[in-house]
Image 1 (tube, rainbow, N blue to C red):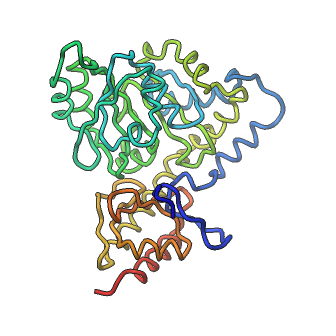
Image 2: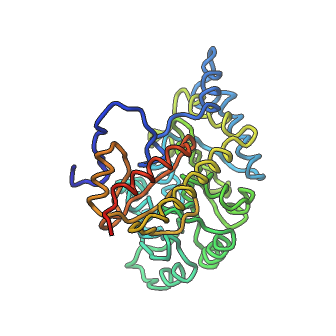
Length: 359
């Protein structure tokens, strides 16, 4: 295996199996696929001037119960990077958690597209920022030699599988407003957070002070495409130009937007997210009962983080399972998806039990 722990071994056979490495491994949800097929009939105007793109954007406005500006891009890195760049000048800084995706997994793209805006890293329990931590960072320095804090970025759900409550987000939003900061939300797994909390999407976005949300679709059953949603509509001015310059203006935009229509109809997006969460809850319970397995973080969305012995990890890889172990020594992330089945979870848990060393 490569020293790069994000590169997984090739399965020993061509067996088709659902894995736990990432919700990106899952295929396209049938509702998204059906909408894509329907959009493929005949011709339609290019560059987002088609009825599918308009309909998808209108459905997102209805979902959040507010006028907002909606832009579709290809992936989460582009969504986050361009949204952050649009809110900052090069001499500004973005406050984020030290495990944030924008820091750990976007190859410096946020700073690149913002022409050097610095990410200032904060700590916090279970992957969450705190109002106190934000204020301390803002007040740490105010001289002209320091990149001026301009924006707070939170991830909902977090990179370690936890979820901000509405009260936590309102407190962060109030602190951001107190110090004149804008608020960005990386919502790659926003659907899973909403499913966990059982709240209206507005309660954990614009009503909590979020200015711009990067609303994830890919991890919830869409083939490609995220939505950049500006609740602060003034901030969205000329974002279409930034998206074009950043290579995110799809000529056949209907094929990015149409699956959103399929997913947003009749609450499909939320049902798929709730199912993934339920499978992760089952995984958490089954693994937690196995002697020697240590759960690392609370299970609040569709991921489970556990610590396993190195030999057990290698044995599971040898059995053909794929999952990431990039957190410390023996820390494993297990992601459940919209198509994860109970049988998948139980079979994996049985294999974990079988490969654990005897006490």
